[in-house]
Length: 176
Image (cartoon, rainbow, N blue to C red; front, top):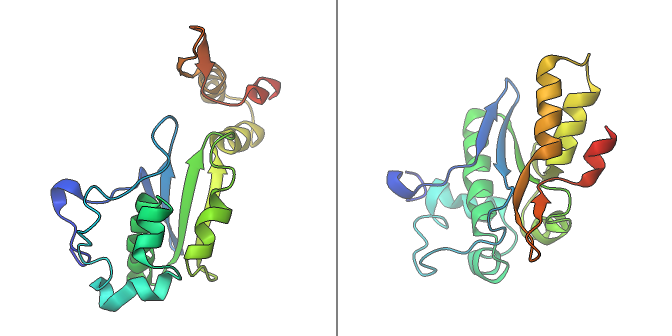
């Protein structure tokens, strides 16, 4: 409630992982829209004033530049809320943008110039293919790993203009 969000429409990353040392907000995309803007651009909630003006402590650019012009509203909210929470709990904060390898290749170059990234407060792009490679390459092959491999190799998202199913992940997975 510190930043004026209501429970029915509050910010929620896809996964929050908490360790003894860090909090990870993971925003996972597969087919969803990558660029986001606020539904009501004039309603700032308490993003600029909440947390004792936390926005000024974690952003270089202003709200309008990041959320409206750059269309990074979702990342703005997660950076603001996650970094504030981690400060409050005395933990490092990592905001991970998890996407297919062909998506948002430039997201770090687009988002990082707007934020105050310091040791212990990091924004990072990672890919589903990275997750797959890490899972498969570490430890012995198990039935669960075989199921994971099959999922990644066969997952589709939609049909192309010719009616052919599009694979969700880079074809390079077949080589693993």
